[in-house]
Image (cartoon, rainbow, N blue to C red; front, side, top):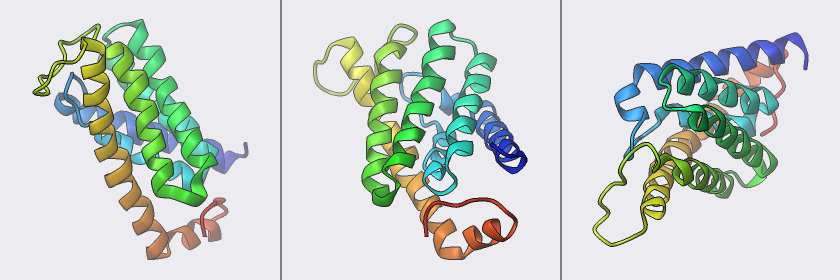
Length: 173
């Protein structure tokens, strides 16, 4: 990684952590909308700096609102995996965003039930399954709706050309 990529990683991490912390009431809990996750699809556009940035940002945000070591380790890992998957599948961005949402929903939902009672979904599911469904749905909103829209807007605005003129490598044309 060069200096620009390290700087971009730091900016993404700081932005992610700030969004998690400032929007804390809705960033945590059994029913959550982690708005910061809308940054994850930027990995398709900006590559590894975003992959590492959203992982580091989640580490900072989850450590700030410490639920336990499980959340501090597995939450950032879920972001890393989701962002890496989106980067790998970037030529088909919308399906990639859905796949990334599933990763977050299954990993985070797979352990979050330990900390919170699951939401009432209107039908009977095991506690862990109800949490996985809830987190997957909220992740779909943040990643596949808001995040996909963000990347699409950046691409259509010509902002990626501005980034490239400043030496930042982009991966979507």
